[in-house]
Length: 398
Image (cartoon, rainbow, N blue to C red; front, side):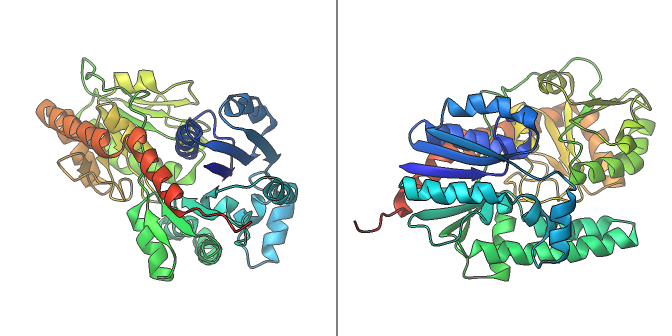
């Protein structure tokens, strides 16, 4: 099976949610298929990682994406019906390269990851076309508008969310199969267009990379990990630090909170060293922080898809407290695999409950590990996805 992957970023190293999904998918498909990759990159320093990607792919090409707030894409979006990110992730040379590649080689499957790459598929390609959605970007913007306190930001996010969602639905019609990482996202797509070929495709976790850990000695501390330039992470952590953390510290004066992730904004950095809070910024590995903390938190109020960080925490044997949005789309159940609570008081009480009840922590973490081992192991997830691709591709008559 010959597959062309189109990705919005270089998939290595797998240190963020999107790269975790794409790298684990890519390397497992490459183990048994002929895989080629065309992707965007966001800084020249990332190009060194292409060497790792080339080890598993037949052919690799990378093209520069526009900066996060580039003037030309922003200007074009203001005169277009397409949302800003559609222009930001568009590279004409990459589009032309893909069309030349499709004429030069025959592919059985094109796999376009996330709505950022959907425009590179025109719908007429003579192969099985798959669009893999880690989230619905328009819904994230809509939720952000609901939680923003700035009226101008609220209006702008709502309008851009509406425009983005409409664009996403339109591009979905170019594909033979839509795979959503969350069943909730699948249902949202079908709500807007019941004819879309959308199904749920579970994500996974690499159990070899996240072995089950013993609990650390001493008083339990808590951990949050995630890219801190990603606004759902920032919004959620600021809400937690403002409303839940004071309640937790009042009940448990010795407890500590570790916030681990690249590019924290100043609003988050201001908490570092205060009231038991530690903000690390980018770290080479989160392993040591998983080992030294007993409770993992996901206090998100905005988001979509599935938070892979929850699966990693479950695999590592950490008791988890999450908001409903934070664990949306996950098979985990409240008080069986994790505790689910809204910010702020209920969330704080759930953290306090786990911090003071070792038996409950033990029960939750063992149940959660069994869940990821049975349902979310990448080595079980990808063969199912590969079987779907094999069952659907066809070649045109010669």
